Image (tube, rainbow, N blue to C red):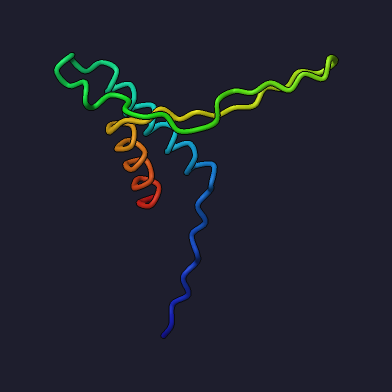
Length: 86
């Protein structure tokens, strides 16, 4: 007797949502920490600083920066682990 297993599809939108929520929660926790725990706050920035393309009739601004700290990265990891468990 063989059983057929249906492959479970996980939405990439759900992954992005859980990563954003984990990062935001980690950053929120880091922002309310007392002064003695500053090493858990943002320790680095990664990304591209904003740049503007001005065509006189159209202005486009591009840029993306990620401020990360220990708790932010921990929140991202927990969001990913939650996604894997679902």
